[in-house]
Length: 149
Image (cartoon, rainbow, N blue to C red; front, side):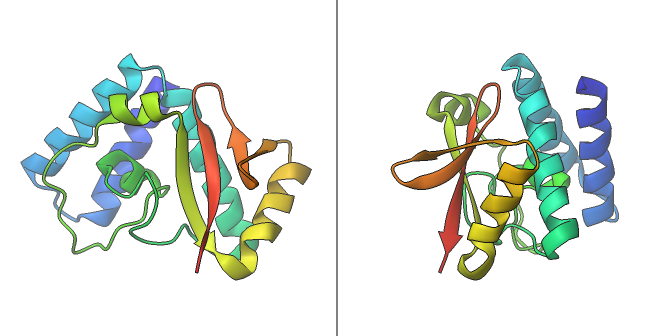
């Protein structure tokens, strides 16, 4: 799983940035080291699978520049964090802080959010609620599915 995360991150970075700068590569490597150390790699790969499934069924991606994944080079490369392509990250995401937070948010448009939650329930994701909002439970983190209005 670790090798898969590293490969998919590097592939995503090369896809986004035709010629990634040394700083982007260094940021991604720093984040990957932190993710591996915190044992979040399995959860991130499962979040990626979820986002990819939603994309293939609903033809929609997480809302750009919203949620806890939007400041992460790795999340951006994996397609689970949306940011404007012209936005240049200047420091690695603090995965230790994100892991301590436990409940991470991802945003989908209001008009399809409930359908996405129903899809998650029907396809074996461990869905529950937190303060009345749907979330998916993973091994080490919880993914709160927020509405983008």
